[in-house]
Length: 221
Image 1: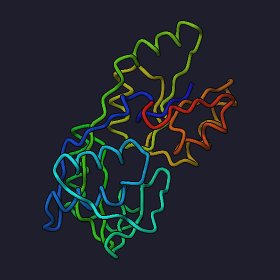
Image 2 (image 1 turned 60 degrees about the vertical axis):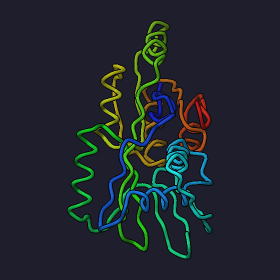
Image 3 (image 1 turned 180 degrees about the horizontal axis):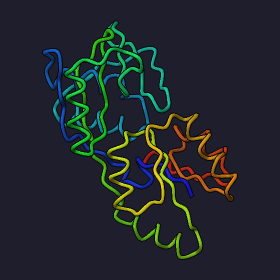
């Protein structure tokens, strides 16, 4: 059985634990841009950003030309400016401030969502999402009926993924997986045995289709 992390093994109700500006931005600016770009997305991390912005009394503008890239994040035009919310752009120079934020998030076991405006990092939002209370019991039941291999497939970073996997006693972890990586992992597991893939019905749709049985959890599990 292969399982996504966010919303499948975890509660799927992540909360913002910190907003970390860089380059002189304010926390309100970082969160406002993030919520603006993400407000049309059904993803659980997007909902957490929008809810936090609302709780702080922020009113994000309506985005235009929104494109959601599974495993990478969302791009949009907000107030006429290009905005990226998600992973730090691959191949882009990594400023020292970005390295410090990533290191701190690793120590805290938090997910990191970067906010990049006009191609420059404005800051990051750190989110926590603990395992579901019923996850250990569910996984024990799977093992009791003969499931011998439980594997996590996640687009999240290595540190928080392994933290959740250690708590739940999973057999293997594949972190920082793109949708294509997940499909390849499912196909590799199918060579060993019949597979069930459980995950997000949006981002994990290709991996669900590649498994013998695909189970979509939906936006709230």
